[in-house]
Length: 404
Image (cartoon, rainbow, N blue to C red; front, top):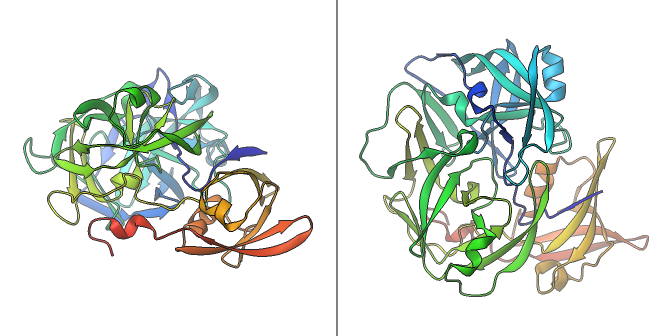
């Protein structure tokens, strides 16, 4: 079994850096008319796009600006008969060579009417990360879109690819640089302290910075462990505290947000609980990014950079044997909703809101836990089945700009 948290889960990167080979992931040719718009799905806080590969599909792939290469599940690469071109090593920033992988040749990848031709992808066995019907079968990395203007419109649930460029000056426009692996990075100010920060649509978290900043940032309280985060090759404790000040990036401000800390991120990381409020446009040729808040030109202050998603407050042991998902409570955090509801270590979760867990995908389970202010968990304890109402509290999404 693998231990991790679902509520407050931080997936630091959907893919991994193609260590030492970021140049291999971009297409040699991009075929695109003036503009192409396709649906953008959200599953478990992550963005999914349907693509065709070498004329087959469509296949669901994650859209991850925090990935330095396009990544395919090993079984998909085999199914498509992709030719192996070499070997590589990938991993998270703490150990970028942890996973042995293959480089494979992709002739053509289509997103709607747009086509990306002749590039290398990374293939490895990602089955343990995602399961269930229609689970993502890979990741679209940032360099794939090097030759087009990309607009990631999460509020509008659409992805637009077009020709052209961003103006050098305008609302929400700022320069970015490419960190290791080609990931876009901007400077974010946290109460006046500048932190180099990745723009990472593959992370479900909000604002995360390296643990070294705990001693340097003004915080309203001592950081406490709130979750166990999973990367592609490691797990790490996540601490959180409220910043005594404002986070500023590209002209937008978030007042007194909750900031997460862990030892894996190198500087900072902006994930979907912040990015999901914006339309984000990237012009890779000019290295410009534009943030457009859908509610107003300048975002109103909000209390949390994590979007206020309720947390159950447990550590979970998860197994997925033969396609059957089984989840047991490994530990309970004092003072959190689970503890207040009387949940205990060893309780086996059977259903959420009346829906059986066994046939659920990982993403469906995560979404079910965040379905409302109060959820009903069906558990098995010492052979007895119990129904336990858990008061999660008002989803602080109600405090987000433009949302009720």
